[in-house]
Image (cartoon, rainbow, N blue to C red; front, side, top):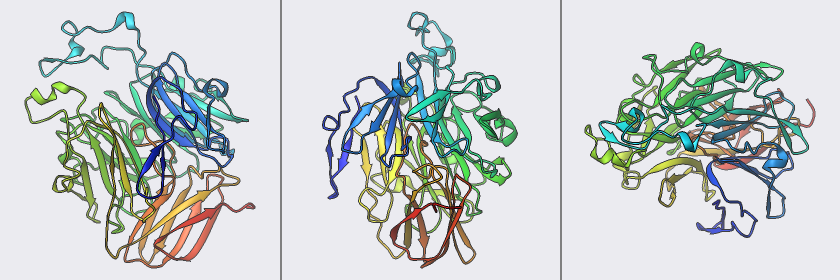
Length: 469
């Protein structure tokens, strides 16, 4: 089932699922939130095993399920994560939906007889190796609430065979002004579909340096985020992976080239025994440097019996950015973060509008966990909310840059990331001692640019795209 909780504004939430008409039932997987029809109201897609659901916000406190009418239901497919982005600059949000397995119930591997159902000499559930991967799909937003499947004509179907895909992310990876598509794949190389323009794509993951890790090994990639952790103005990529492997940080070197810096950044080694899922860059302490939080939990309940120190329930990893290109993992020192979980999805957002970023973690076979950030101190912050006009209404794909003295902060507006999740659409910046921000600039998906100066801090600022170029 689906659940929607309304924020009461007093630190509590109320379940309004039935009230707003969310009565659909299915094997749900992930969620991606965006205003796909530019009517000013956020809609959301729920992916699943068997079909997807698209809930259109009527603007009056209700939702209507329209996936079949919109052309994105993908019935009979095991869909995984999804992401929205404007791929052709027409002001409408397109959609990529990853897919995991092509499931045939009559031909499933069997425990005790198939090599792909054994891990560390113990019988476990089967797959994904030994099973058939499913193909993802790219949908072009045609306007009027409808989408068209362009997977084949875009070149994606030909460029990349189906892999065990989990979470896509849509953003401009090489700075050419066109949004690309990264897809985190499980147990197989990840994909980067480079946008050549006119809705044509080529697969460039290996050439860009993001398909495999520094050893040339494909990883079991799950969650993904894209942000500028080192303040050089270029967003970097991080991917979570399986246990007895490291989460991977790909530093953006410019012009579409990335380098695996998991070891020199010190973000890789602490993750070795953890199995990572949801991930977000966020500045939890407002010191001006993006930290990283990772939700963990093993897939096999049998992990408690494995040799080597892994476990089924695992704590959160919190990597504090040292401001010199390295991180220090501090999650184990906080009693709340140190609690073991069977975590999967993770989203961040300022739920109480107090200026710091809170964390929501979705757990396997357990209630979600909401971690409220009660940071207190003198460090400054700024939150930015975007409204597009020539661009899509949400400003998805916009790049915001703040400047003050020698420091620069850069953030990208995403819609679908982490692992099967979507976070607060407001972009949050920790600023340390900076007050005010000397310059705030926005590069909109339409190609238009906008600049504000002497921006006051410790507040939410709403920025509208200029109606004229």
